[in-house]
Each structure stands twice: as C-alpha cells, then as structure tokens.
Image (cartoon, rainbow, N blue to C red; front, top):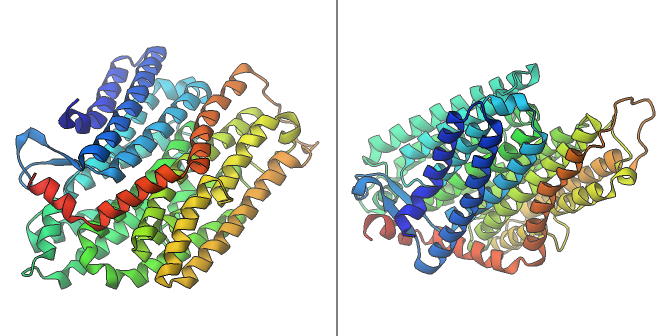
Length: 499
C-alpha cells in the first residue's frame, strides 16, 4: 500500500463507515458489523503506518497533488502513528463494551456514526499539516463530542453537554483568533512553512508571543490545563460509559498532542520564555486535579478529576523541554490513553451490575467478583505508577528528565501527586471492592451473561497495559525516537516542503 493511501485511509475509512451506518439507520445489527470491520481495519492501517514511518521516515501526502504550502498536506511521523495506533486499540475496546452495554435507543439514534466520525476527527488532528485544518478537525471533535454527550437527552447529559460545548466554543474562538493573527504576521498557514519563516533572520520573532497566548489558552482549555479544567469533571461523568470512556480516554490527550507539535515546531524559538509558565501550569494541573479526585465519592467523578491530574504529567515533559522529558510525556500519553479508558470501562462494569457509581452505595465486589476486582487493581496501580507497571516508566522518565534539568520542585510535586493518586485509588478499592455491601441498599445485582461478556474489552485493554509495563523498552525507544523527531524539526520541515 502506498504512503498516499496509508495517510488518507484513517480519514476515509471512518467517514465511509459512518455514511454506511446512516444508510443502515434502522438496522442496528448491521451497523454493528460495519463498525467492527472498520475498527479491525483501522488497527491494521495504523500498525502499517507506524512500520512505514519507522522504516522510511516521515510520510507526507499532498491532497489533490498541490505541493505545500499551497495545498493541504497530511503528515505522519512517529508521534502521529503511535497516537493513532493507541486510539484504534482503545476504540476497539470501547466499541466492544458499547455493543454489549449501551441501550438500544442510543444505538438507534446515531451512536455508531458519531463514534466513527469522532475517530475521523482524531485522525484529522494528528495528520493535518496546517493550523487552519487543525482548527477544522477540532471542530469536528467538538460537534461529535457534544452530540454523544447529549445523546439520550437526560437532564444531567444536557447540562454536561451545554457546559462542554460552551467552554469549547470559547476555546475555538481563541484558536481562530490565534490563526488569524499568525496569518496576518507571517502570511502562512502550513505548519512547516510557518516554522521555516519564524526561524528566518527577517521574521519578527517577538510578535510570535501574541498568537502563542491564543494557542496556549485555546488548546489549554481543550486539554483541561489549570485553571481551564472546570468544564471536564462537569461533563465527562454525565453520559453512559460507552460514550465517556472514549471521550475521557482520548480527546483531552489530543490537546496535549497539539501543544507538543506546535511548541516543538513553530514556537520552539519562544520556548525559553514560555517555560516558567508551563512549569507552573504543569505543577498546578497535577495538584489541583488529584486534590479534586480525593474529595469525590463517585466512581466516575474520581476518574474524571484524575484526567486533569494526569494532563499535568503530560505537560511536564513539554515544560522541561529536554529529549528525555518529552519522550516521557509521549510514553505517558500512550499509557494513559489505555489505562484511563480501561478504568472507565471497569467503572461501567460495576455500574452495570450494581446500578450505581456512588461509592456509598457500593461494596463487597471483591467477594462476589474477584476477577473484576483484579482488573480494576492492575489498572489502578498502573495509573498510580507502581513498578513495574506502565505508569511507572512514564513517571520515571519525566522525573529523571526533571532532575537532570534542575526542576526539583516540579519533580517533587509529581512524586507527591503520585502518592495521592495511589491513596484515591485505594479509596475506590476500599469503598467499592473491599468493604461489605451496605445492607440498607436495595438495588438489585444483575447476574446476566452480558455482565460477564463486558469483561472481554477490559481484558483486551489490560493485555496491552501489561505488555506496556513488563515489556516497556521497545515503546520507550519509540518515544525517544519520536521526541528526537520533535526536537529536530528540520526533518519535518524538509519532508513537507522539499521531499
């Protein structure tokens, strides 16, 4: 398969699948088959893309044959391929869970087409080579997330959807303003061309801080960085797990991806002046997120606040801005996509059996379902960063990078947050799995075959989490190679503009 088709397929495959599902609107079972085929092919395509990027270097496709910077460029490097492969794996697990657990009414009213379009949006953000199309693909994500959160029309969902769409519309306005300022200053939208212009001797680099503020604020909102995170825990706990697992596990990390891409490519000349702010934001995002999680008594809300805390770790690598630290952020993003999605799925299995997410109303799960307890425990310990699980390696790389750069306060903050994360995971373990089930709670327990088949997607993701922990070296090496590509962005510029 040629590079052209390989880069276009992650966009066209979900789109064609979504269109097919629309034509099969009244046939949910046929839609399920279509989505299953798309998910399996998507994993294969992203795996081939990663192999091709590793063997042949950065891959570029110019849509319509128009060369950059005049046409639309799709670009895939190691970071792009890693994120798309991880997204495809998490997407297959969420699809399997949704097929079993999601109610028929939501399936009949567009869940599967929206799910595929959401994956198309993620692919578009990761593959696009210009900042305006980056904005367009984020709008695709916004529309799909809004529709999925609101799907079902329950009061809590509509409230969460309104909060989500309002704050993200503000973020989109800031991004569009930043793009307009960037075009007015430098007359370009292609990211490689912009990087070349701002590094040239005649470019006014001092003015670059102005669009940088808009981009940092806009993408900071979408990534839920302190103090712009308040919308996330108010939105992500509202929809069913089949919806929130994918949104929570994937979408906020895409905001971090864009910051890594832009600050290593376009704003690299300004990174020294931005570092103090990024260091502060990273530490506060970690601390405030984990404190919010410790204060919650709802399974999903604890996990939602932990998303914020983990975003702080991902931002930490960019703030330190050394090869090892950025590699740690990349590894941590991959780890967190899998672990966070799996923890949401475990919470969904618990809620499917016991009809509640409230820690007060739950208990005794370990005695009745030791396998489910094991599934939660491994994912929770990985999130907390206990060795030799996957979270440990990402935090070790970040801590080592921080110590080498002399950022002792931030490293100390990250270690303290890891301890509080472990304590909050212990709280879930004690309240949900270990303590006796409250006798006053009358809600029934579902012991159906579907309740057991929900274990399959959790086992599926857990297998990758364990591999990522016990056989971390290949992924660490890929993360280091990806960080090297980001920091030596002249390779990216040459591939897009001259190859």
